[in-house]
Image 1 (tube, one colour):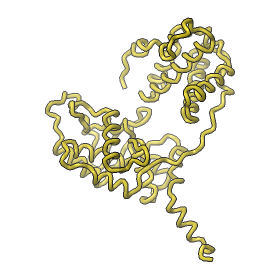
Image 2: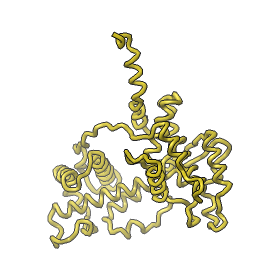
Image 3: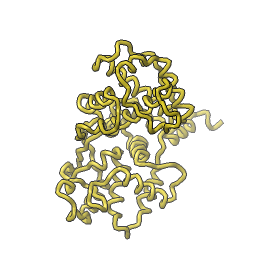
Image 4: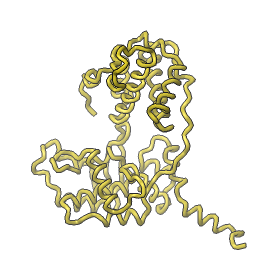
Length: 329
């Protein structure tokens, strides 16, 4: 992850935010997606604060056009807990943020103000100490059943020029449970026998084990993969786009949506992340994988993230109830 040293300057951010984002990247080694999310949250927060404090001179200024570069140390010192709750109310009522989105904003603010107090030494009192996160109702992950997964793979048009590539991508998602960014970043020289080394969340390297279906799909794709027009630096990536560049995340998202639609599986919104859920669920349900092993396979930092998969097997619960000796009364 190589940032241009001036990339944050070009986005008209306050100096404190630029320093914070650079800190996340260089010291905390946060991923590009994480930094982008923090940047978005803080930009929205400070635009609101400019409005809330009456610092936007032109009342007709569009919210997304509010200039926040004037935010200085004195402004940061003036922010109180009540201002933060006002922002959370704004996020819920006017931006219609879900509890998940608001919880992320709370986490962003806590991290930012902790930096201002502990690292930047700009503030002495941290207003986020008493800021509570909204209660989040646990949601079961959306996933494809085994039958739906097989149907999806079988529904691909074998005559399509990208058949082998798309089949390989879907196979890796459904078998390995990797993240979208991890799949797009796969390099050929990182595939050795039945193992694949990928760069996961937080730039952490981990090993993914490839089963027979994955190895077969990769080999079939490599037989028709044409990198003759690709730049030398792009040839190392496994998945290439029609423009001979490493396939990007948006292309994969569109491709998956297309195949899901063609397969008639439109009763839910299936994304690359939902296919990751599918892999995890199938491994837990049919492979008798223990929760710690599943945590390592998925690259979860905290096992609490993995534990959502212990609640998805309705069939097991149904059979457990049926096995009750009183069920035949």
